[in-house]
Length: 160
Image 1 (tube, one colour):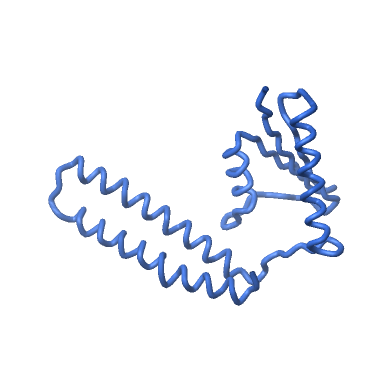
Image 2: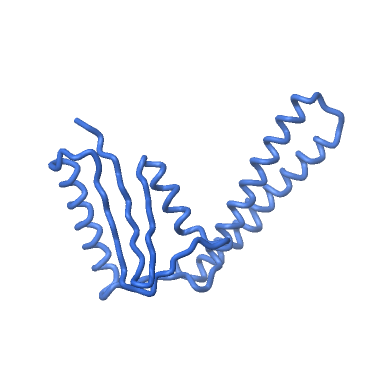
C-alpha cells in the first residue's frame, strides 16, 4: 500500500468509524446523565470505557497510517529476499517442531546496530509483537546494548 492509499484509508477511518464511535460515546454520556438504576449506570460506564478504548485504537491506526516515516526495509533485492526468508524460517520452525522432541522453539533475530532500544509512548511496534506472542502462548524478550539489539521469541511446542 503506497502512502497516498494509506492517507486515504486514514481519512476514511477518521471521517467514518472514528466519528461514529465519538457520537456513540456522546450518546452514552447523555443517557448516563439521566436518572438510572445503579446497575444500568455501571453497565453504561463499562460500555463507555469500551467505546473510549476503541476510539483510542482507531486513532492509533489513523496515526500509523498517516506516518510519513513508514519504514519499508529493503533487504538486498527486496521482496525476493523476504519471500526466501519466509520460506527458510517456515522450514526451520516446522522441522524443529516435528523432529526436535523439545518442549519449545526459540527464534532470535539480532542486529549489529547502535542498540539502545527503549519503549516509547506512541510507538506500538514492540507492544504489538508482545501481544501477538501472547496470543499464541509465546514469550517475547528484547535485549539491547551498545552492540545492537536482539529479539527472542520462545514458543511452546505441543506434545504429541
